[in-house]
Length: 354
Image 1 (cartoon, helix red, strand yellow):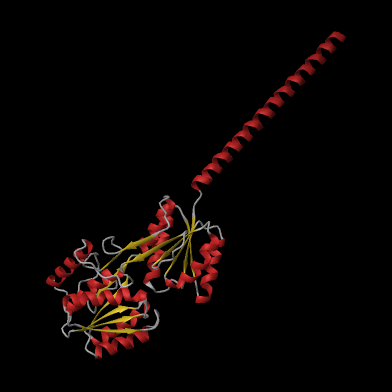
Image 2 (cartoon, rainbow, N blue to C red):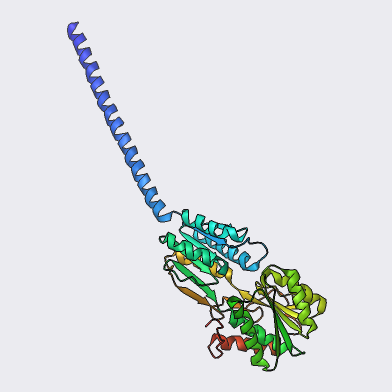
């Protein structure tokens, strides 16, 4: 009985030891495997996160996107790049001039990898803030800020303006054409001077009227100036004033002169027979693309007819809008030749800023 009891005790004790060992092994191995798995998974996720973590890019605008095609297109290209390249994008619109610097500073102080902005309205704020955030990358579209952490993008608008000016001179029967420009300054000279050079290349004696709205968003004033130019004999008046061009278009319909718009394709085949396109969508897209692909550099990028960043519907851009009847095949062929000559360097349009 004692032997049996002792044997039973030994068996129980041995079973307990084996069970304990089994529990220790399972308890040791499984958690270690889980920890290793967890650690490896975290490591993989961590590496994956460092490799695939979405870059964050902000687009800080000096005004609301609103109805300005310049900013509308830019925002569209920016968001398209975000979708296609897996980038987290955010557009920050400034409601008034006082909020410009604050918005840019907030973006720079945040966790954005790249901050894109645009136009001369942002120059002063960028010149102040970019040096304070020297570890951040910036880009500015449509003007130049010469700083070591800023890419600047400018357009050769004067090339497309030259073609529009040539078109105006070819179409004009009165020998008088006009421009309604937003403001008097270096930026708009790329439009008005290019237009004048193109018009005079066709007709050296052509009369060119120029008036300034004083604002990019005052259609009523632009309409008043367009009507004034029409009364002075202008039968083609180019709109060069962003949202204010809506007033020029109204005047054209009322007074019967031909006109052209800016930035996006506004042609209607009736009174608005040309548009001077400006590919801000393409530039915003390519800026994000370069940053994501590691091709981002801090320099000045210059885009014109050759690069397809500026142009005119029916001449170097396809358009769904009908072509104006006044634009005959002969005129269209001449304009296409002028465009090609600029692209090939046979015609060198004067840069009014140099």
